[in-house]
Image (tube, rainbow, N blue to C red; front, side, top):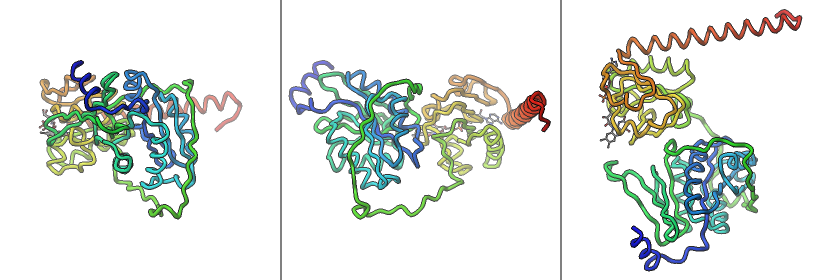
Length: 368
Ligand SMILES: Cc1cc2nc3c(=O)[nH]c(=O)nc-3n(C[C@H](O)[C@H](O)[C@H](O)COP(=O)(O)OP(=O)(O)OC[C@H]3O[C@@H](n4cnc5c(N)ncnc54)[C@H](O)[C@@H]3O)c2cc1C
């Protein structure tokens, strides 16, 4: 390996010493950040430490100073902030222009984006203009140390049958988009210190061909990647109907419904609910795996969840190997019982809260 690295630097790698540091793009909608940005700062910090460079963040938008401050709390040493009214909504042209200005001035050696619809669009536009190499939809990111300093961007390839590690030897920066939910954010620390650099970027509205007239939120669409609680069902449900039972539990807990590929392939639920290698990678605080065996392709999408509860009638199901809590039994009995218990506890705590409030009011001499 050492031999190979030495050869690479000497023979076919240009001198990239002007390019240093790791830059992470912080995506947001209406000033509300997507968690993938914080997750990438977490992984970016590991890469930056290995390369002994700074971790930087890029924030683009209008009235988004708070996101720059948040980026520091999540680990950035320095934040480049492009703030202008024309940047309120994501549009490829002004966002890629602003990003390129920062990249050309700052010269980071690595730039990372979330593999979201926006992240993919923006990264693609920037990489083709600079031009440089871009690996899409990565699930592992590492670096070779000095002197090669190469980003090892790995992603599933050939219908997800193997992992490919892709290098960008001839161009800088090295760019990658990465899946949400794969990497872990650092704990938020508001006392962390960093520098915010306002970038002098201006663009006239007339230069931008695309206009955003309105955003229409599809209320029926689930946002499984950002959910803190996911109640997932698999083939064990036996049909589409029992997903209503899962939805009831999810609603009680303030979560969303997920699914295995078997359930999606059977047409019981839409693909936007699918967790796993060919679905979404999720990292909720609480994940229920109900009637899901725990095939490796499912596990890669959820095994980093905070607490995993598995319900399965087969005590040898592999899902129990990753579960923090396991219930062996028939899901059709267990799920309604859990929902009922959640309801009971919620109304009990409501009654206790109400009792406390009226007690406090009485003590204060006011009767409500
Ligand atoms: C390239 C590739 C990509 C893939 N990508 C994904 C992916 O993204 N996501 C994914 O999930 N899969 C994916 N798969 C498929 C994966 O290999 C499994 O086939 C799939 O996850 C199985 O889904 P399941 O656990 O719901 O079904 P099964 O494996 O059939 O498990 C059903 C479980 O339900 C239990 N059960 C049945 N009845 C009850 C009951 N009444 N009460 C309690 N438990 C009960 C059974 O004991 C069993 O463990 C992929 C496969 C390939 C080859």
